[in-house]
Length: 458
Ligand SMILES: *[C@@H]1O[C@H](CO)[C@@H](O)[C@H](O)[C@H]1NC(C)=O
Ligand SMILES: *[C@@H]1O[C@H](CO)[C@@H](O)[C@H](O)[C@H]1NC(C)=O
Ligand SMILES: *[C@@H]1O[C@H](CO)[C@@H](O)[C@H](O)[C@H]1NC(C)=O
Ligand SMILES: *[C@@H]1O[C@H](CO)[C@@H](O)[C@H](O)[C@H]1NC(C)=O
Image (cartoon, rainbow, N blue to C red):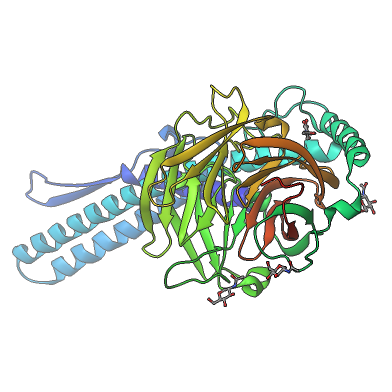
């Protein structure tokens, strides 16, 4: 609502400025040798602006005109009152240049305001689409959304998804492993690297208070390097929108939960979706509408490296099942920095690449047999990929794992909860030994328990 109000306010200003910018002041001598001043403004009926703002626009023009006239007459009076014609000439020159300056200023304002109008129109259109999608979801209608934000594909309507998830849950129940096998073998205080044994219940840290917070990324750096932040610092990016550039910094979890950010960094290139990650004092992310990876140095607050991820699909070619242009997901674990994505060659199957954290170059790649668009999300723990089956089902499972050490994948079944029914980001933090997730405006963590690899598997 407020957006619409301020938008029409800006359009009004915009029209007013357009009319004003065409105003001109001229002077000439009549045959008697007296100086005449002519002040011209275009007729409001011939102005290019139309609609209900014409009257306001006219009022605006008139009041500006009155001001300028008063200014000119004051200066002319002053000149008449004084003795020499030279002084009058000077005052007029001054008046003229003042009007010119004013006109230039108005022209600048006009440009600035038209840019604002454009921006606001874009945001408005986006928010409309978002609202429309939300309406559709809550009503569970079956038409696929046209909104680019959710990137639904035909046959991917919410009802269809829900049915799928219900089926998935039943299947998961049947294949669940006996609890005894989930316990770490002979060591309950296991803290080293191992397989994922269980994921706890989600713990809520914050709920986003605006529509731009429906999905996003929030993280803590597991291995911070540099002044200005620690392993307690919380970072957040709201990922709704087409020009996502703001990185919010919070001192610690408490400030994150309660208050405003202590710093807002503006990124040099826009962020695509929710695949960003933090590692060793840098933010790593995919540049919007490209396969370009960017490393943004949080100490110098500048771009440190950028490199294309070879052959990676992007902008809706190989997203996770929830869509949202989640084509390239960056992840960090005990073993370093990873990219989870797909390529044309892999025909949509998940490809895992280990990246050099400084240069972003691919060190080694693995191709799995699991289709990227069949999983809701994925993360790395101790060099192993784990995929989440559903992003909407309250009770779902982590049902597949791939070990980069052996190059082998297999089914697994670790229960996982999407308490808020729309989980758009899941990332592992090995220092805090938690999963960080963004579930439908809710920023949550899950405790994880790791154990020794079973059956001699590495
Ligand atoms: C349990 O794990 C810890 C940490 O990895 C290790 O220090 C300890 O020796 C282990 N205890 C047993 C009984 O294996
Ligand atoms: C895991 O769940 C997804 C989503 O329901 C499904 O497409 C996939 O086949 C499952 N994978 C395994 C290994 O069971
Ligand atoms: C999810 O599982 C919990 C127990 O773990 C159960 O209480 C709850 O009813 C389940 N929710 C749904 C939607 O099945
Ligand atoms: C955070 O850093 C402090 C100080 O360097 C360290 O003592 C603590 O163990 C770290 N916490 C985590 C979770 O890494």
